[in-house]
Amino acid sequence: MGNFYLYKIGEFLTKYLPLPASYALATFFSDCQYLLSKTDRQAVEYNLKIVLNTDRVPAAMVRHVFRYFGQYLADFFVMPKKLNKEFIKKYVEISGSEHLNEVLHQGKGGIILGAHVGNWEMGAAVLSLLGFPLTIVALAHKDARVNAFFNSHREFFGTTVIQTNLALRRCLEHLKRNRLIAILADRDFGHHGLAMNFLGRKAMIPKGAAFFSLKTGAPLIPAFFLRGSHNSFNFILGEPIYPPSVQPEGINDHEIKQFTNKYLYLIEDQIRQNPSQWLMFRRFDDNT
Image 1 (cartoon, rainbow, N blue to C red):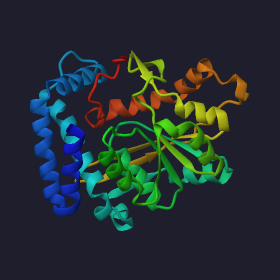
Image 2: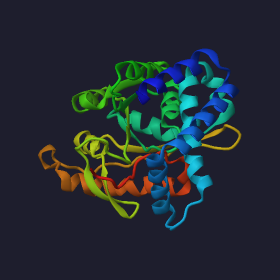
Image 3: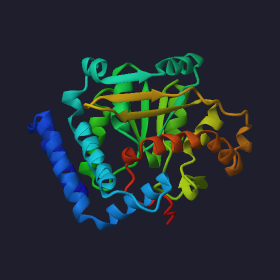
């Protein structure tokens, strides 16, 4: 039911409201969610305590996470009428795009390594709008209408979407076609991740990014699309991380863990630098 209402709100924002009103409405719903959902509020507070290494987190900081999530949704819903090359030039500061060109020049494709920090959906749209051949791996929503709505927004600028249940074979195919594959690597929402030391706790971390890199030789490119001041954004694209040479039959959980440790600290650093923009509404070390 919650997903269906989310879909209807998004549809309303997209079709009828001007952008300032969309932000105002998003803030209102975010504050309602903060006040009404004790479970989400406690999970966010717990995560922030771990990230900040403190026993007390100001209520205002917890509320900011909810508001950032509301802004993330508003931006996502209005992307088709808001995002264009003029918007990017005016509001998005991009650093490191040369790394993408370097990777694509090698012909093996590349893996965009992201996290639930900032606005990863808009980051994907920006890359596609700038002409980069991008495929994203996305978790399917249970409601088919919500899933179709979200994927239509993701594909509006030319992004290709692969649902997680089809990711293995299709990601390998897309890398062979020298495309960029975007994967969020800070939380495993299925039952196929690896228990890793993350932010000082044991947490289930997806192994897809490391596996695809080891399997194909495609490098990883850390990418974080962060909200700045006055509705501006900072898009940080890090230097490529190249996998060690491993025979296909030698790719096991041990190899994947070793390679994952080479980039997981980068995600930890971004979360610690931008704790209110880590949009994680369950305890990140809840491995059930």
